[in-house]
Amino acid sequence: MAITVGQPAPDFTLHENPATQHSLSDYRGKNVVLAFFPGAFTGVCTTEMCTLRDSIEDYNSLNAVVLGITVDPPFSLAAWKAANNVDYTFLSDYNREVVNAYDVALPGLAGLQGYVAAKRAVTIVDGEGIVRYHWVSDSPGNEPDYAEVRAAVAALN
Image (cartoon, rainbow, N blue to C red; front, side, top):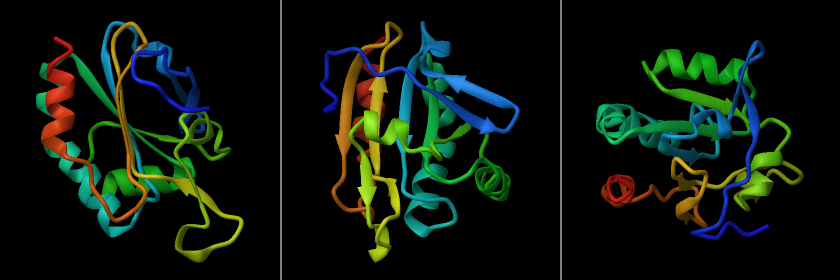
């Protein structure tokens, strides 16, 4: 399914850890930045997630939350989050339902046949659950335009 700006965002429920789940619908009334990334403990992903970490107060001031989403297990994400002093939520799409629903599945990352990761992508969902911005990179080495992402969130207020 293709994600289209102006259409409702597919709802989902993912694990932050084995005991805690988050649904997109939990954040109604807030703008949500969904930051999909290929994998924890990798260079570009660490740079991206730490860049978002360093801007989290800007997003909070814009009535926005940032959710990092990858296919890595919640145990790895917890360790990576702690190692990088990240104070926003990472969610594990270990069954690949959300990367498929948002059309950001990346099969064969690093030549690993049969392995499906998440493409690097950013989707912004407004407080009513409507997609307002959707950027997808065909290369896992490309980072999003952070100023563009922030401006897209600011435009919602």
